[in-house]
Image (cartoon, rainbow, N blue to C red; front, side, top):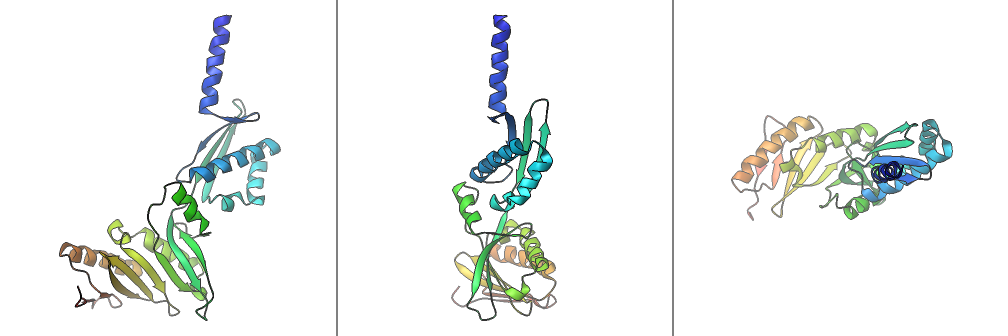
Length: 245
């Protein structure tokens, strides 16, 4: 009997390590790429909500009512409950930040800031602070400037897809993207402390960025930094160099 009691105690200890508990509910959490501090706080909030509601449906209703996804920077989540083990499984996903956004109004004075993430949503600037505190973001984000009239969801999706699809060698040099009132796109690169202005015009951005990647690779191999790359007309690409370089 003593051996049985000892074995039972060891099994219980192992369960407590692999599945912590709050009240009567054990839980396991996968943070994904979410900041550990916010994901930990969200875990506690979800477990308590589940204990109060005693159902997954009730938990999901609480998530919506209390805006937990927005509050804790989630892009997606999954929840499952095993009633035999009283085990709540939580899986979180958070978006990748792409750009700092400054949306300016027509007078060019009033503006507001946000973070464009890879699913084209806008997050509060505090998301960057949380990511940096968790060592999940170690460099500054490039900037995106555009008029408020060009900021519908389709535009955000297009920009997010364009930046996400860039090769790493180009993205590391990306300093700013500017979209003007005529829907003309300009990319500003910072290469070895020199600035390159890239004009893409109003269309065919994916094709033009692909050409830009090849141009930058070729010029970097020759250790040359262009001051201007004009890709408005893909059949007549113009590359200019500053006398200072």
